[in-house]
Length: 224
Image 1: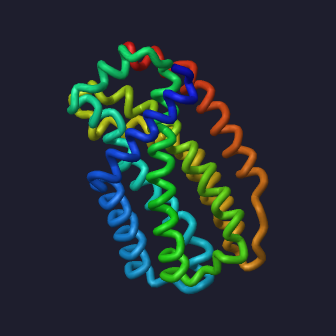
Image 2: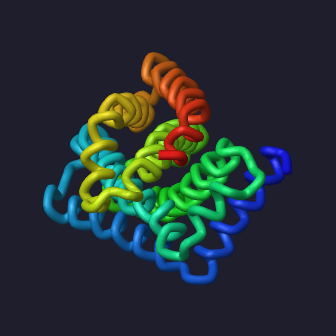
């Protein structure tokens, strides 16, 4: 089976599993909404403060959501005794990585689409004039998050304290992505919106480098 077909079937399996249970998506959406709402009532920001601090709070909520959503990516396979079957299946390890990463990307994107209008309403920021640019920033930041998160979820699946291991490994690596994503989002929500091309170039470079490295190393991670 080719990489494209295998990736499609793994992605379809992940989507069917989540649509059947809806456990992970519902939990993540409720969690990010709770974080954003609590932040808005705690700080009670003015319009100017919302433009300054809102992007950071938004990406902090997305980071928590990503950590929560990426954790079960391989734990579910191990609990159902299907991880060994995936390893023995006549498919490339790259297809397993791509299928898992794409599924996490879809789930996190759905949570972001629910979160974005609520964030705009609570913090009083106008996102419609720059909606396309914000979606691009969200896509690049989310891609970096799920790429690294999928790799470390595979590393930590055999660990005894795997629930704590993933955030400890993931957060230091994602700090540059968060800084660039916050900078790009803040420039779009400013009084005079503009695209922070330095941050965008960094996000693109990060995604390309980590995606290529993850694709090359994922086979060895599964063997370990």
